[in-house]
Length: 374
Image (cartoon, rainbow, N blue to C red; front, side, top):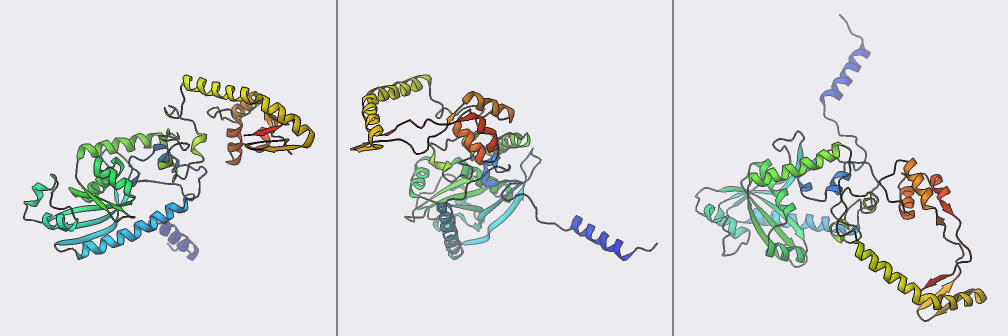
């Protein structure tokens, strides 16, 4: 049986697409898999990376930190290669692995895989005369051992913190995943102060119980992502500069309410009552000032005195009909959002609510109002 040239060409094209791996064409910035560095970060931040939601641009300081990290990693690579008794078997090696009981893969990239006798290891990493207890049994071994080194380029505050309290849980989890993927029992977290060149080295030994704890954490996050739910936030962008300051969702995150509200972002009834009382007292004490300034503004248009000014706005801010706004939210399936004008304006900017939909909830502002600034 003969085949036409067009048929063979079409068959070849189909086989090429079926057999030759092609780069994924996912929407820009949307994640398709978990990475080892995701362990124990904010669940909401991780979950939103798998969704098509508005993102903030990367702050310049993050780019600067990334560049510094590349320089410091290159410096340690040279040091390890030059260290007597140590051999660098791999650096920045990409990995793909799985965790027991989970049906999805993980990716990662460790910094350095090194082989050497523990005596040279202690000297090469600058651990000093005091050998950590976890290394003492290894020092007696005649055979060289393989181990991973994960370098964390950070500030002096973090170096001081880990020196007093031990390695951070997220860093320990990331290295533990690399140890699992590479089949290595021993690992080291090396915290480097990029300003003062101080470092703190913390050894870790493979721990299966800790690995299962990491697995359960990822399983819980994956369950929410698979169900299309946005995980609860663990931090408040209004109060937590770290880690919210570098988060790409720091503007979008506050628009999504938590299933379980953050304790620190939910004031108690007593705190609300105290704040309302303070505002009422301030308004009462300012009432005579407002009346005097209002009379002056009516005569001259604007008044400026030491610490206080008053004027009539050239364009009055609109007033909002909250009842009508609640009806609009319900009509567009936004029942989970607080019925507030600021939230409505943010939803319009994010494209989740048409600007024309909120027009009915706006009322013209009063042009005879006097704006008082203290």
